[in-house]
Image: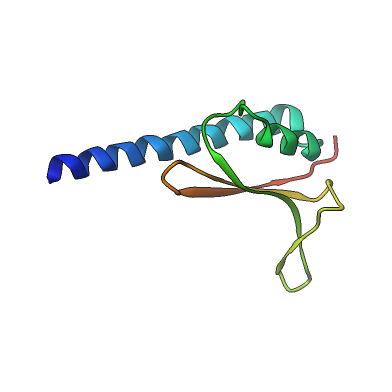
Length: 103
């Protein structure tokens, strides 16, 4: 029914809003404290319970791009780019990239 569908859409909107809020908090922490410490940000994102909200971590890895622009996982270098993909309880996900900045 329309009422049930409306309730489902409302729950999805709230869940998606939770992911957006989590990324806003992560981004703020990155800008203030972690742009030169990606290892610290990575650990904080994976902490349990999460300091940023309710989400599932799908990816939390260091990456780089080759000369052709293809993404490469680079776990040996925490002074590159941190790729974070989070999902809400409904399976919606968002990805953000956090580049290392010299402190």
